[in-house]
Amino acid sequence: KLAALGHDANYILAASFSLGALLLLPFVITGGTWFASPSGFIAIIWLGLFVTTLAYVFFGVGLKNLMPGTIATLNLGEPLVATILAVALLGESLSTIGWVGFLLILVALGLLARATASGPAGSRDMVTHV
Picture 1 (cartoon, rainbow, N blue to C red):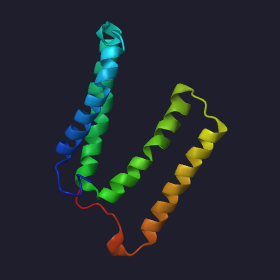
Picture 2: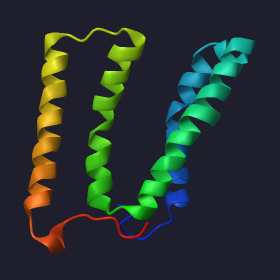
Picture 3: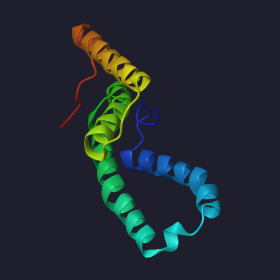
């Protein structure tokens, strides 16, 4: 919604991260001292500076270059990517209902992409500038 109102991508990301930090603060305070250990500190630096920052830099580029509808649709694919990575890289197992959910999201995204592609040219979400 903020992107549709014309706000800068950095503003949008700063607002979402600030809200997230405030909501997670009680868990940090009551969660023990794991973050004060050397391995906890390294984990925070790795996840915060490298993994999350890199992902959101790319997300910010997308906010600048894509229409809001396209951004929302791509965000719906995030659980699919996380599931694939968890199964393939971490050896996680998924129950039957988990795979059914995975397939439902995949089919829904496919139908949405097909409907968008077959709609009138003026209604498509397209890259506005590269």
